[in-house]
Amino acid sequence: MTRFPDTVYNEDCIEGMRKLAAESVDLAFADPPFNIGYSYDVYKDKKSTDDYLSWCERWIEEVHRVLKPDGTFWLAIGDEYAAELKVMMQNRHGMTCRSWVIWYYTFGVNCKNKFSRSHAHLFHMVKDPVKFTFNAESIRVPSARQLVYGDRRANPTGRLPDDTWILRPQDLPEGFTADGDTWYFPRVAGTFKERSGWHGCQMPEQLLGRIIRSCSQPDELVLDPFAGSGTTLAVARKLQRHYVGYELSPEYAQRVLERLERIQPGDALDGAPEPLVSAPDTASGRRLDDSRPKRRVFNRRTKQQELPGL
Image (cartoon, helix red, strand yellow):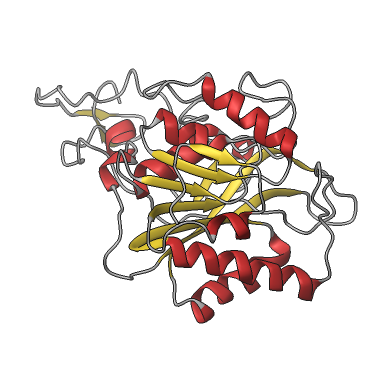
């Protein structure tokens, strides 16, 4: 049986996904409970390790079943079970990990006896290691060649993400680059305009926007087994995708429906697409359109040749 898309259902996600036709979903995104004792409306977030992993096995099995052969699955998870779930998806379900992204956020959890937590793991999994959707042009970012050096060899459409290690953005002299496999999007804090105000684990719309743009096409079907505050479904609607979600809490499900009713396809995403600048301002530096030959002069003090104005 295929459920009618473009809504959220107030039911257990395993039971709900069993009603979806096999190989009917193009993209799934899941941000499940992390099993760390968080206080949800109706779900108890403190299972034994065996019970939690067994439950994850069941819902991941349903996600895998409903994904199309060229479908994509993104999983957001904390440190505690990241390794186990990655192995489970690869070894038990035959998925391939295309990227292991770290989502860095501000307003992290303050800890007393360990380094404060300010990240989550985002596993980018595909059913087929060769045939899958990845819209590279939709997520390109300006390169250093463009922004800093004014290099005419730079690709005018920008560059794709690469691997990187990042500390806190405020520790970096030139800001936090948005083009690596460590993504910086601030958590949706209580003072943010996009904050729903009734759910404590709200994902930023721009983070979901990057995933949905890159891994699906307009009019395709996006699934979220744990709708929560409804961000996945809201972004899918704004980006003109079909969507279906499941939420165990009657109150949360009703509020998600109300959120979706306020959205029209084509609406802009909330939040800044790139919260921090990835390169310093070069207003007085070399211009791409400056093709005049440069006159070299000799500096008597440094005994070196210099280009005036640089």
